[in-house]
Amino acid sequence: MTVNIKNPYDDPEDYDIKERSYMNDYELILEWARRCGGHALDLGCGTGRVALPLAGAGIAVEGADVSRTMLDLAARKAEQAGVTIPLYEQDLTELRLPRSYDMMFMVGNTFQHLLTNEDQERMLQGVYRHLKPEGVLVFGTRNPNLEELSRIEVYEQHYSNASGQQVTEQHEEMYDAITQLLSCRTVKITAEQGRGEEISREDVHLQIRYTYPQEAFRLLKQSGFEVIQVYGGWTKEPLTSTSPEMIFICRKAG
Image (cartoon, rainbow, N blue to C red; front, side, top):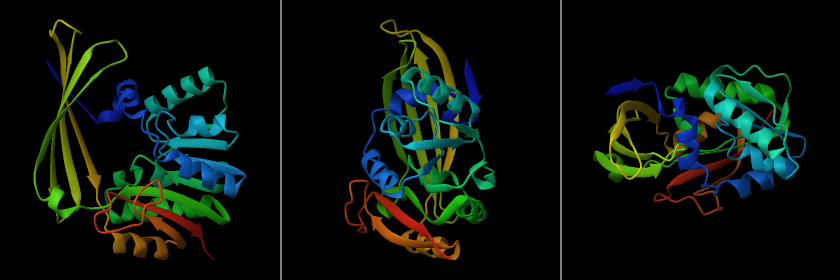
């Protein structure tokens, strides 16, 4: 049976299994959280992959995410870890938070879920309002690779879910150069471990936006931010035309 679900984040346990081992971004976020002091906010915190270890390191960190199910899992993990992380169910384009912050950050390419110019601008306006004077924003987004984006990409992923079942994800990705959107379709097949008997088949759809370097610089400047550093990766590699990512360290100006 095929069941259409809205996006991959409707199943936070499976998402957490696939993503929890990635920590390339953690050290840079921790460095800036310590430099800024005070309170930090994880924008699009998901299941708390970065926020939880930050809290364990003594950082006063909070999280905001549009997905209630992701936040519920983050809250359970925080309780199990014995840390306190205030969590807010928020659309990042309509931030309404009870405090201001010394630092805000986005990891996991959350920025790419802002699909229009207006969404990007509203998100940055909300960040600007909630940052303290000279507060810092740190975020990453994929650097567009035209050779890769010019072809349809088809690949598979395999893993065991929280119930020990075998999951196969069949991915197909197609880029539209006019909208700068990558459309991602995933057929997610769950089967009994060792038996191969199919339990469910889900059709998952997602779009993400690619932003080009000069476009990002212009957007940040017009939104009131000064770019104080840009890297080509989370371990401070120089940004080049072949860098897989763009990591921006920005300060609230004015």
